[in-house]
Structure formats: structure tokens, C-alpha cells
Length: 297
Image (tube, rainbow, N blue to C red; front, side):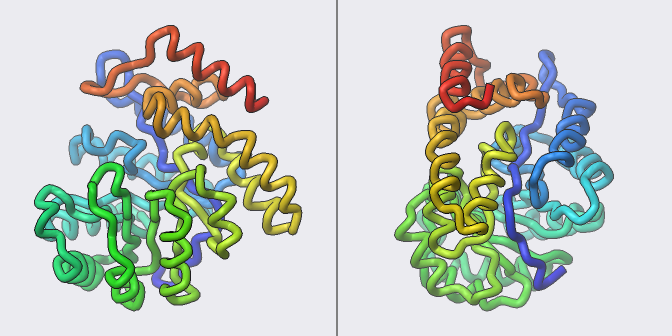
């Protein structure tokens, strides 16, 4: 799969939980089946919005199996396999590869953040890519890791034959533009937040892994499709219309808000896993109001 081209929209899929905290695997499968009918390019399993840090390895493997067996043929299946140590990341990545995943999205190690120098990150991702059975994409998500990968690191790593892309979730358009300028043309530079989707498209970025695509996959896809068709005004209108939803489900209300939006729009959100808290009634009304103003319900 080295050389795979990722164009279009992928959701970092939610993990529905039952009231007792167990994963609702039937709901997870039902979501994949419903998303199969939407205009998506693939699925990102075990992302930040999947509550991956709360999952056991057994649960992770079961989710991957369901996704691989249920996904529409031709769609990319990425998996978040980043752990803190190189050894564990390689092991989990290759375990996912054995189940049929196409590529791995790996976040920057962060626990010993002060020691995650340019040299450390280059060495880590290079060794991982050397030892991985599937292609690697770098995951830059300073919101959670408090590490913002440097341009010089990306420039080096983007030349590795088994590092095929990066998801940049900072949402900083000038940084995105800089990354786009210094990576090879066939490197899959993906925008990691719907808040930067339209500006990213103007920079020549071809795809995104977007939390908003869980509940509004077609609106996200329509922004890109309209832009690609040269109807920039339509693309901008849809982007501006759903922008407040993205702010709500990635910032204001978080994953609980994203899951409730999914429930309202015909997907199965389920509850969140402790220590995350579910929405209260006022927060639910807030989500409902935002969706109505965006004309999606």
C-alpha cells in the first residue's frame, strides 16, 4: 500500500458505549454500515474522538475486525496505533496490519515532552516506518500532546518511503501552508479539523480526517466536491454553515457533544466512557440549537 493516495474525507470514528461502560459493538457496526452510504473516502479507527486512550487492546482489536469486515470495498481503513514507546507502537501497528488495516496514523510520543526533540522524533518515526508492515502517517495533535512537530522534522520524515502522510490537527493555516510547501507532491498532507477545511483546500490539500465527518459526513464531502468542481462560493457557504457545529463538537461540548449530534442525525452515538461526563439537558439543547441553525435537522 506504499504510494496509496488519500483524497476525500475520513471520520475518526466514535466508539459507542452502553450505559454500563461496555462498548456497543452492534452500534459501532451499524455506524460503519450507515457511513458506507455516505460520501466518505474511508475510516480512521482508534482516533482521538474514538476515546482510544480508554480502550483495552482487546477492545481495539475487536473494533478493527468489525471495521475491516464491514467497510465498503475500496475505502481506506486507517488505525491510530501510537503508544508511548517505539516497541509497543511497532507491535500494535503490526497487529493491526495483520487484521487488514491499510495504514497507521501515529501520534507524536509526548509523556516525556521535554525530551521529544527533533532528533528523538525523527529517530522514532524512522525506526517505526522501517519496522512497520503498513505505511505510516504522522499525527500532529498539539491539543492533546502539547508537542507541535517542527517543519524540519516533517521535511526529513516525508522523504521516508514508508511514511506516506500526516494529519495536522493544529488548525493553524500558515503552518499547514508551510508543511504543504516542503513535503513531496505525493505526500498525503491531511487537515485534521473541519474548522480549517476550506482554507486547506485552497492550499492544495486533498483530504481531511475530521471529527465533524462522524455526524455530518456529506456536508464535509460536499465542501471538497464543490471546491473541486470550481464552485468555490458553494463550498464556502457549506463550510461556513457547518463551522459552528465543528466548534461545538470539538471544543465547547467535546466528544459527548459529538456523540449526541450523531444521535440526532441518525447515527448511534451512545454514551462516553468515564471519566468523561455525558451532556446535561441544557447542553443537549445547546447542541440541538446549533444543528437547527446549520439546517441539518
